Length: 360
Ligand code: PMP
Image (cartoon, rainbow, N blue to C red; front, side, top):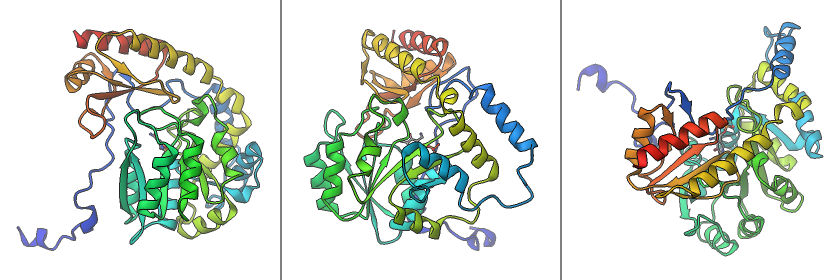
């Protein structure tokens, strides 16, 4: 080692073996690997945002630290007071703030496997210890297993996604109740894909019932704004008070706050594609079910999980023909699994033919 290298600070011991978040961002014709919406937001949205910026967003000033206008608009949609809503840069940052406030060094986060790969990563960055329990054979969480897991681990936080990523399976509300009643910590329900689910009101309804529930949402999926980085939570007011302690000063920029307000104003337009997306999801599901050598799970999100033989080879062959999906095939519980995001009808057709070709 050179003297220079010897003097270099080492990353924290607890992060030494951590791999950065890494869904590939490749420039290929059909990108179906990160669960974005394939259609850009409508022109009315972009025009309103451009107008708002040109009319003067006071970009020489810091943004509203507490994003009051945005939180008020979001709160109205949910029939909640604004002090029960919080917003940050994507739901990822909402999670980091929750872990920063309620977990961190010496505390534990309970997750279920398979689940969203960034949850453990974000938790570890905050110094939180992560413990994991397996979902059942069908990738479901029963109320009994939920209760047993929180009783066994007594975590500071338990986090479940509904619909879950990468399975697309919604969580049984009774399992959320069982988690909540089985310990004294925080229950985080990550509803990143909820707008695409058959029953999108479940988490919101549970919030009226459960004292320590937090519902996390995002504008990255059904709201078609992954490029803007906006997420939010619905919770009890004390959660929002606690998050003020860990958020960075002026964490949410003025353009994103304005974009969120405009999206809420134009909600009908911005989310008008959802019915088409769901139709495409069901068409893809039927086509995959009819494909020899493919096992597929029904999904309440904007993606489908499938299992094939020689999954890595299939992934590579599809990529070579310009179709990028997500390869989970070497992960525990997801052996042989690929995940495909629902794209435009044309993208889905290209995916289906690339898949059939590579299964030959
Ligand atoms: N939660 C889940 C379950 C997700 O799948 C994703 C995105 N892949 C996120 C949260 C992160 O979303 P955001 O863009 O809001 O940070």
